[in-house]
Amino acid sequence: MKELFEKDITERKQPEAQREAAIEALRRAEENFRRTLDDSPLGVRIVSAEGETIYANRAILDIYGYDSIEEIRTTPIKNRYTPESYAEFQIRYDKRRQGEESPSEYEICIVKKNGEVRRLQVFRKEVLWNNERQYQVLYHDITEHKRAEETLAQEQYLMRTLMDNLPDHIYFKDHASRIIRINKAMSQFLGLNDSKQAFGKTDFDFFTEEHARQTYEDEQTIIRTGQMLSIEEKRIHPDRPDTWVSTIKLPLRDKEGNIIGTFGISRDITDRKSEEEELELRISLEQLHQLTQYREEIIENERMAISRELHDSLGQALTAVKIDLGTIIQNVSDREEVVLKINKVSALVSDTIKTVQRLTAKLRPPLIDDLGLEAAIELYTKEFAQRNRVEVFLDLEPGIAISPDASLTIFRIMQESLTNIARHSGATRVNIGLSKTGDNINFRISDNGIGLSEDKIKSKKSFGIMSMKERAASVGGTFDIYREDNCCTVVNLIFPLNHK
Image 1 (spheres, rainbow, N blue to C red):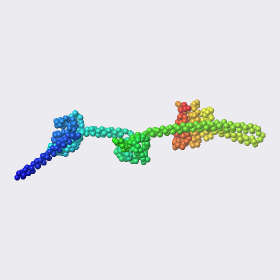
Image 2 (cartoon, helix red, strand yellow; image 1 turned 60 degrees about the vertical axis):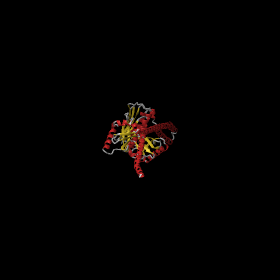
Image 3 (tube, rainbow, N blue to C red; image 1 turned 60 degrees about the horizontal axis):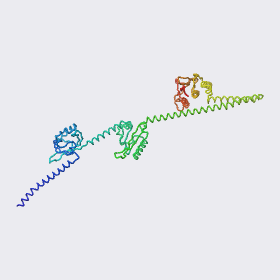
């Protein structure tokens, strides 16, 4: 009986021991949990459903700047939030009281004891605390992280603003030369409405194959060598005029310094290139003018030398022959047949002398050097009128001091003009005028012929007109040829009086 009694007592004590063991285990677990919360780097609060603080670890006190949990309990909630965050808190609180679902993760802005504002990331969940249903709230101070994000966002905004307001073309490409980003100027140049439309594309999508291939090779060289490239290149676009750009291309690196693509800035230098080409053209034309002038000087010098040679050597020789023939005639006057033959030879010599004189005058009019431009024009036009049955009327202002080079230029332009009139115009009258107007000399030739057509005036094959223009330029003057009254042709030369 005693054994049964003891056994009954033992059996009744077992559930009680188990319960005590369970309580002890729970107590130790709560102590471990509390110790974990105490050592947590995150701020931790245990709050009731009404929001009363039951527990707060050291980290949460540091976040708020309080010395004890009592300060948290006694400080009004409104004072611990910024106005905006307090309004959001009230919305969450009302939802909880009404049994509505509220977010378990959110951000708040708190006001520390010293007035400093901090941003916290909050995690809220239900827990069992002291055998009662409470809420654990974790606080992660993300103030510095947010500031870094805002700073980065601001920098990115400023960078985008700067890029999109620069007139230069800016682009970023990956290791395969695919576009990552371009600025507004580059987007407009490519004919895109939005720069995002270029993402993932290459130069082969926008330019000729030759240009795109060269660009690709350049960028791959930069990726391979890590070296900067500075070039002037012509961008050939199929739908718009070619554009010259000055480009700097650099390797694009990640934060570890690894090359991941290329970065480029291009400046439109088309206008500068056009100016350079125009300057080169002007230099070439100036060199051509100088070469033409030099050539004309050589030709005139050769003409002068030939003229003198004809006059001095051949002319004198023929004159001597004629004199000798005259002497022979006097000595053989009794032989009629010989005299007749000698007279024929003498007449031939006389004609040859006249031919030499005419050729000499054409090569270098001696009257320009001997008597001046006015006399040379009068003599030449007289012969021209007789030879071509054309009336020539001269209006030459006397006493104008004109340099030898300018005199020769006027004479040669007159020769070329009269030759054209005789060949093409069918004119019966020619007017030639020479006058001084202010500090300029004006030389004008007009005729009553059929007139020179605009096509011939502008033709690049009108070498006579081109030659006259070059001669005018050689004395610092201007040359013009045009139709007047839809019929006759006018040649006008103007150059400065003080030309040397």
